[in-house]
Image 1 (tube, rainbow, N blue to C red):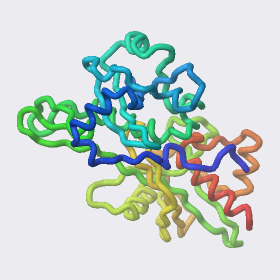
Image 2 (cartoon, helix red, strand yellow; image 1 turned 90 degrees about the vertical axis):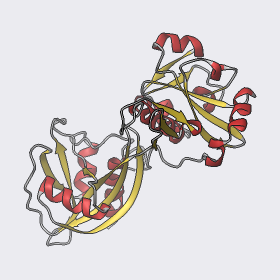
Image 3 (cartoon, helix red, strand yellow; image 1 turned 180 degrees about the horizontal axis):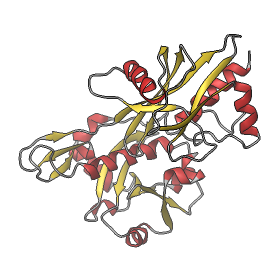
Image 4 (cartoon, rainbow, N blue to C red; image 1 turned 45 degrees about the vertical axis):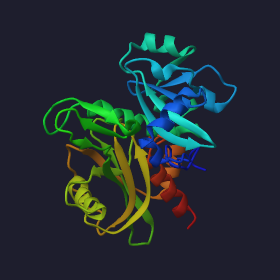
Length: 312
């Protein structure tokens, strides 16, 4: 293996979202009061991690013992897993020290900056909570009349307190693309770009957000033409990844280029180079090429392409 892992982080959620229970106020109240609900603390884009290492689940959640009655805490029902019910608890209204004091021994950390959480089997559950609470933070006021909104249906909608307009959680779809081309000798190669402001030897795939009225395939073709001046075809969906940093859904594609002649949008891409799989493998091994961060779908796409093409 060229890298330490070849999987898509933050995906594969095993939780049953049990959306029908979001409107069952009696069940929600009874479950929270039972002391058996699992609570996942969150504070300003960070997850709480406990010093309790007796079980992986105890490192980021705890059994609720009345904390749901504390004021100014946003609570969202996430779903059920193995007969346990999971709720997110947002302590962002408190100072970090106060929140930690309430919770006990532990600290709030960035999901992407800790191996304990990033590599956890439960990481998809944590990203789910993060995405939901960030949506709440960004939609506290109505986008129609500007008045305050209130959380309803166990944290899965917000309703305007004045005009009764309902807001639903949304994600921003973005395409992320690895462009391929065969040389006249039939050698596979792919295009990697160095983004503006990036490290001198860090290269990645190309990406862009979906615009209104576009299909995903149309976005791929438009973005590749805009960023590197390439007309692409044979656009193939590979995989997708939830990316709540802050609220994206990354949709990964391979696409083939007719030409290797580049016209770069210097506002987006400082440099772009064609690599064959052996070159990528060698340069990464020697530390001369740095690819996308380990937990990104960009890294997954590059590694998958290299490993598939090194077999030939």
